[in-house]
Length: 387
Ligand SMILES: Nc1ncnc2c1ncn2[C@@H]1O[C@H](COP(=O)(O)OP(=O)(O)OP(=O)(O)O)[C@@H](O)[C@H]1O
Ligand SMILES: [Mg+2]
Image 1 (cartoon, protein in one colour):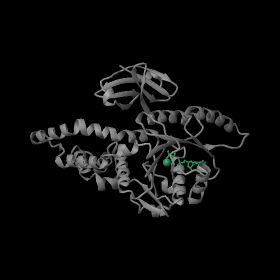
Image 2 (cartoon, rainbow, N blue to C red; image 1 turned 45 degrees about the horizontal axis):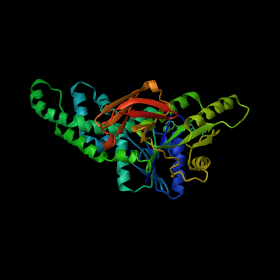
Image 3 (cartoon, rainbow, N blue to C red; image 1 turned 90 degrees about the vertical axis):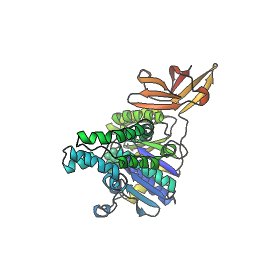
Image 4 (cartoon, protein in one colour; image 1 turned 60 degrees about the horizontal axis):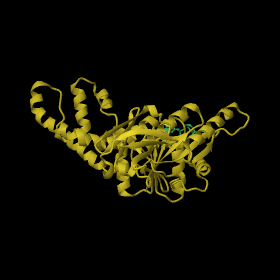
């Protein structure tokens, strides 16, 4: 199976390009599902599906054409399906502490629940193997990064916090009951979390395997979009997810316009920035790209005779090199100013911190007692010396 994520700043054309890619792949005979992870769904808009029909989807995969399914994840429906016990506890907690029912319902959607639910589907579809290609129409950049960091966060939580919390509750529950009305989670809550985690296991190996998954960054030739995309690209590198192409969307083609001149400047910068990753250009259309026919037309322009399911670029994000008698880590980390980078060592892992995000480089056993001593930048790479 192949997994393709479309990511980028708000409004650049992620949904449109994801839908177009889906149409083309389905026509080529691949059983394709396009999943929207954006709570503000517009996938059905893109396919021109009428409102009344949409209501029946309820967040489940829906066949809309030969070989083509769409799914707009509906977190409320999914809570009922998968988060039952966790949700009921939170609802009870919020109600007891004096929130109105409706507010409690809203609040019980914890940050990260949407991302975790999506990961659950990805894992499920991968294991069931009913689809050939899974296309993910991502929410804007920030949430995409949260989505990609979720498997690691969950792992950390389960390993370091979960068991202690559970044990603590066992002891604290009977005592606390005497002093407070605020409910404490009972063991069904912990069972539900554990159950959930079991269903998620392995999803990181799928997402971070460059032979299965890749991100396509959608962007437009303008300053703010480019800046955000650069940052996103850096983080994708840190997370270790393969970026296999850049989709440069909404290029104006009329030569005399002022905007064309400005775009030209940014197009050059984009080429310099992302090279050697292939850049796929796509023009600005004067009419809305809605419905299968127009989406297919867009896909023809984007992919021409290429197969959209191919992996267009694949390069290792980090590698270990032996030089001058010592070992070094070569980490692909474009755009991160050296002064913002922090290097730490925890167990046999090097943690490269840049802003709020962390990248983890697990050292092979042979190098596990080495520590990062210094680093220098060469081009898009950070060379970390180990001592
Ligand atoms: N190449 C293009 N030419 C003209 N209009 C386009 C092009 N690509 C996308 N659009 C239009 O731009 C708008 C935003 O596109 P789309 O919804 O695909 O972006 P998005 O990145 O998914 O946005 P959001 O971040 O809000 O989810 C839509 O109205 C879409 O029809
Ligand atoms: Mg969208």
